[in-house]
Length: 169
Image 1 (tube, rainbow, N blue to C red):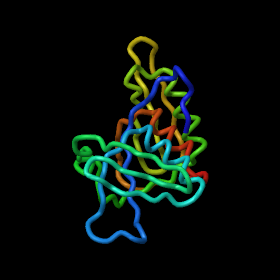
Image 2: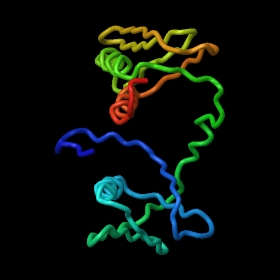
Image 3: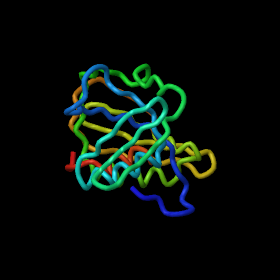
């Protein structure tokens, strides 16, 4: 996705895995700059992208195009420690209704863009509190039968994800 000039750029982490037809041995791991990943997305639309990993660089090739990228120093954050691997609780939420509700309550969110989500039997509650502007609350009917779960997320990251998702739930 392209970002218009002058637009604030939100940082987020992503991890991608895949299999290579000609790769053997241990998985290849690399941390790449966002601009490199944006370019690779464009390349991938035209077919398979081949790559070779060097000591500190990666070479990507698709057709007659080549991209040479330096890997970033440091380890990818230990996301496994904060994201549960096993979760028996599932919710079915109408995507378009959730997007609209997030945009409405997010309009008054403070700088941290925090929205509080509470999942209860058949209901999702969204809440935002702003000491200056006030508060906003929304409720959506959902498919959920587990225990109450509360979480706090950056509403824009969630909307960005929903913008790319497929299907209505």
